[in-house]
Image 1 (cartoon, rainbow, N blue to C red):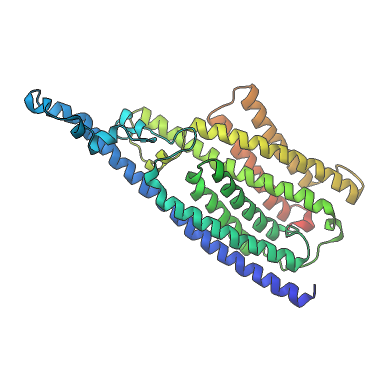
Image 2: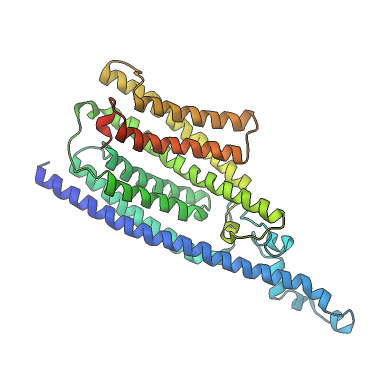
Length: 362
């Protein structure tokens, strides 16, 4: 493709990335609005439930009390005691009780309007984002993950796409604020710190192994991004529930829309297991590519070492949780440490450590 057309496609790609970032930002606001609005609605339900519990004590026993019909008792206060969703646990625990969404990630229908808008905007942002990735690929004449800018923009797109695909099976809209927020951070970092014009790859990267090795790494990293958000929420949820159980004030009302810490941990563990398999193939295919490019499978290059470190951390997480009983906050912290290693590998190692992989950093 002529250079002028390459440059034009690169400019279109940057425009699409900018539009996608703006759309994601509006989606982020909508997800945050959903959390705030729903938290306020649940507090109102708690207030009604508390009033319903106190009402029998205020009404004297007698004809007036006996004449109250079941239909009256099934009014707003009665409905507050027996809603059809997770708010049922609110009434049983009283006002401020530590209710959460159920283990199947289901929520009350009344909180879905802002979330539906947020999801629609995320879909729109992902479509625009995908157009940006595609035009970058057309402009470069290759797969669009040959440097840090392309890896971050493609990785952000895959993270958003995986989140939307998982929504088909699980109601993870409570993660929207955090996942979309991370996607925005990745796009901003790519544009501000790692922007690279469209260009050709160095000879070592001109291989079909780039498609295999890096695409699996991108997908695994996207899954690790989801589990990082879940593990962080798990820590917050566990601390919140301990505070409420001890009689403290519930200062994080929006967390009542998030599943229990155990539900978050279980789902995070399953996704981490899938991502770990992908990362294992990333490590294996990287070694095969290294033998093709440099004549050795392993050379203790900084990038290779940190890729292995990530594999060890997540292997330790899976082993400790499955066989050693490392559950709860310890498992969450191991998952978070693993993701921090991923971030370190794709930022600090690429940018500040010299090695055979340095050319792919910027």
